[in-house]
Amino acid sequence: MSLLDSTIAQFRSLRLSATAGELATLLARAEANELSYLNFAQSLVEHELNARSSSRVSRNLKQAQFPAEKHLEAFDYRHQTTITKRQVSALLDFSFIDNRDNLVFIGPPGVGKTHLAIGIGHKAVQAGYKVLFRTALALVEDLELAEMKGELKKRLNQLSKYDVLIIDELGYLPMTRQARYNLFQLINNLYEYRSVILTTNKDFTSWGEFFHDDNVAVPIIDRVIHHSHIFMLGGESYRLKQKTGG
Ligand code: ADP
Ligand code: MG
Image (tube, rainbow, N blue to C red; front, side, top):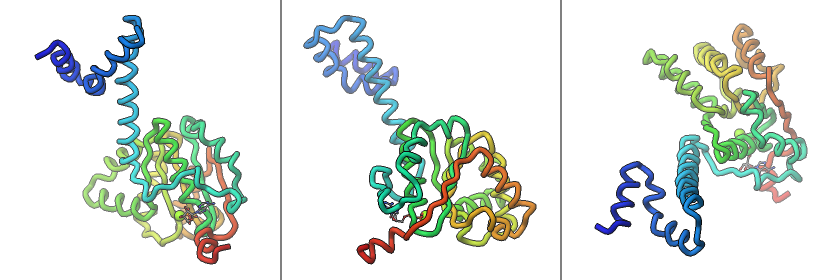
């Protein structure tokens, strides 16, 4: 085995696989650029760190389970005029996540709520945060299943490992009393600890009605609204616009 090969194998045994894979190239580049020893050492560690952070981002992107690829770059603010690009861009310093604030997008179907939630979630992943996307329905089923197995607490704790939980389409379908209660537990667990991005077709005044039960609705609303950025979206459905070519 050559010295290069054995060195590569040693890097690999230390689990520095990105460096191991590129060692020959990194060496050749150092020689060509006459790097100092220190700069060479630094280039190795930088290479490994960059590779790790980009593989972490791709792992987190998979784990986020976004239902579709929606990018903020493709969002048309000439169609959706009830939110501005400036408002959305202001969120992308992610201080809302660091402050455990929530985002709430309220509006009728087709106005871009889910698109914005995914787009912002995607950027957050790229910035190194962990995100999970769930429809309210899937979340409620998930919690119900966990409860039946006697693992509600465990599941709630798993769900609070993410920096951001996206809850899409709250309010579209009715929920059982137990489902509402489980959802309340979840919101309670995340309150002032993690961020929620919520999309809903109901404004807060009709939440009481939706939850049928003010004992649960009021505290949920309270915790979601407190520390949150609320965006009321209006306008025409984008789906409709595309169908009619308008
Ligand atoms: P909502 O969640 O409010 O019901 P969606 O975000 O699912 O609406 O939007 C419906 C479809 O229209 C999606 O395919 C979305 O990408 C697209 N869309 C909505 N608003 C815009 C917009 N302003 N610019 C570009 N695409 C949009
Ligand atoms: Mg939607």
